[in-house]
Image (cartoon, rainbow, N blue to C red; front, side):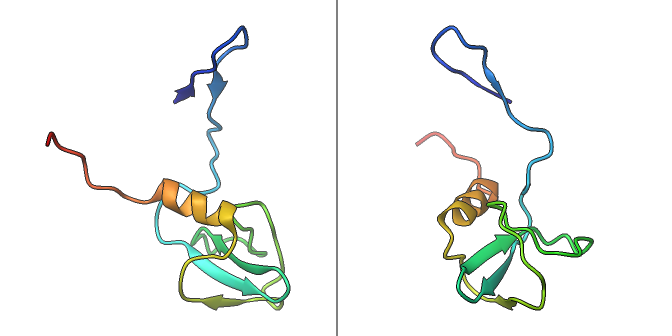
Length: 88
């Protein structure tokens, strides 16, 4: 997938190793830092939020609801499954 950039610069190439490619995110509340979403990958020894923030599992706890972090929320919304749009 390429994003078009108007100008003399080449098109932006989307990274192949995106932090989140859909699925059910896990939301963690980290005291003093708000809540952040992570991918549901259990292989990570330290949680890493979709925005890039990381912490230890002893610092936070899993919570319900959407994350407070706007960047994490945006990534969750971009990775959400959407029904195909038909002609109206």
